[in-house]
Each structure stands twice: as structure tokens, then as C-alpha cells.
Image (cartoon, rainbow, N blue to C red; front, top):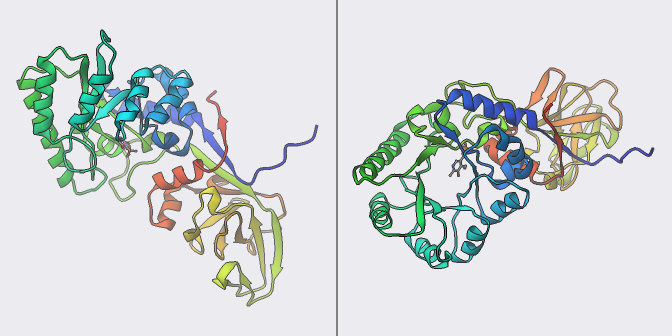
Length: 379
Ligand SMILES: Cc1ncc(COP(=O)(O)O)c(C=O)c1O
């Protein structure tokens, strides 16, 4: 049989690790608290459909996505749990929201009226969640406006039912908890006012991964983990994570070409690298089109034979150059790890994020979103 030709980058998604990361969160929060995994941006580059199929049987409250389009994709792939649309909605999204039974997170009054006018007569109670802005100033009602709306909705025979009240943290990964505490207090005050008015809302939620790990008061009765599911804590400099997580994504490539260069030769565009010794250079068939940004030039490394090999010269669109002078007998076709473990060494999305002065979220979305993924099924 002819072997399948190698692809430039292989992105492997270890579904077993998503499962164990979820189970770790399950054990960490109180058993009465529901979990709503956030799988927006194609599950942070890991593939929303396989991630949802892995997590749905483990007892999730539903899934959070950014857009109606992401919600429809899940419905078409037989995800029957509640699906919360966390991103902003326009009137022309509502037809699909209703048709696919998606749960909108509402942040302004006009969209409620538009929803009411589009809901069929005699419809079953249609669940929505209301978002309160407690400080991020991205989406969400002012608390008093939300309370007025809740009072109106609960005193009328509206087909809309308020299933949840939520807010989102701006700074929960900051070791300084001031802003987070302010948001928490503001949301708790709002919850109290709702309850004092005799309005029953089944679910209150605000905790992202940082809230889950570092602010237990924010767990309320549902939590919304994102980055933790994919194996990372939100912030490196915070207190050490109280739970063990395993990275889910790995990316590998191979040596595609080798060349020897004399001292003083330049490598790559704009001559930013010059050899200082007799050097051996490997060319990898991977570049910024695969989610390895150009800024990685000169600061990062890859793993070959379990050893770090520095990235040199500017990263090109679909190639990068590596100094393999210190690697014993490198050969064309040798495996190269871009993200993941090789021998005793590991490159994590946090390492790449550190080199690039960004966060693991952006690295995972960048690499996972650019390349076909291979799924390693749980045993
Ligand atoms: C509204 C909302 N909740 C929860 C999350 C999950 O956040 P994290 O990945 O930090 O856990 C996100 C992600 O940005 C979000 O937008």
C-alpha cells in the first residue's frame, strides 16, 4: 500500500485529556454546581463538534459558543444540550435562534422585543439568559435596567422565560482581586434584588476559568470553564493552579530540507540572522499560515530528538529555518515538535505565548484553526 504523503503540520487533539480536564473541574467545584463548557472559536481551535461529543455524555449543563453559526453547526451534528450564544445578536439572527432552539444571551432591550415579535404564537416558554455588565463594559445590561426588564417580563404572560442571569469577569486572572471583588459584589447585590422581588431565576453564573480556580465565591450555581478544558490555567504568574490539567493540542512537523552554511552567511528574509560558526540549517514546511506568527523569529525553538533547536531568520509564510548544528546527525524526515512533548522536553502554548508576548488562548486558536486536526479518541 502506498503510504499517505506527510502533511506539513499535524495537529493532534487528545480527547482523553479534555475528558480528564473536565473531570478535574467536576471534582474541584461543588457537586451541585453545573458546568457549561465554553467551546467558542471552534473550541479554542480544538474543534467544537468533537469536543462537544466528548463532553456531552459527562453531564454538562450545555455549551457556550460565540455565534449563531457555531450553534447551528453543533445542532446539525446532533448536539441536543442547551447551547448558549454568548456573543452579540442582531435581529436577523433570531429566526435561526428560534428554529434551532438556541439560547440567546441578551444584553439589550430591543432584541427582547424583536424576539417576542418573532416567536410563534402558543410557543413553549422560550429560555433566554440576561447578561449584566459589572465592569468589563463589553456586553450586558446596566443592573437597574435589567431589574426593570425582569419585573416587566415576570409580571406579563410573556412566552420568554429567564433561565439565567450572568456577568463576565474583566480581571479574574489578576493576583490583585480588587476589580473581581467589585464585580462579584455588584452581581451579588443584583441577585439579591431579583430574589427580594420574588423573581425566580434558576441559574446564576459568572465564573470563567480564573473565577473557578481563584474565586470560589463566584461559582454560584453554574461555572463556565474555557481555557482549563484545553489544559491551561488562565495566568502564569498567579498562585499555582490547585488542579492538574493536561494540554490537549500537539503540533508536529518534519525536517524537509537540510543545508550546511559557512560562518557569516545570512538566513531568511531581510538578513536578520547571520551564522557565527559552520552551521547546519534545517528547513521546516511550516510558517505563519499555520499559526506560527512571524514575531516568533529569533526567540523560540522547536524540539528535535528531544532537544531544543532555535528558530532562526524570519518565519516565512509556509517555511521556517532551524539551527540544527547541535543536533547529532539530523535527517530529512525527522520528526519535529512545535507544540507538545518530545523525550523529556516540552513546548507548551504558554511557552509560545511567552515568546510572543500573548496568551495561550491566541496560540491555540491560531494553530488549531489553521490546520486539519487529527483526533485521538479516548480509550
Ligand atoms: C462569556 C464567557 N464566559 C466564559 C469564558 C471562558 O473563559 P476562560 O477561557 O478564561 O475560562 C469566556 C471566554 O472568553 C467568555 O467569553
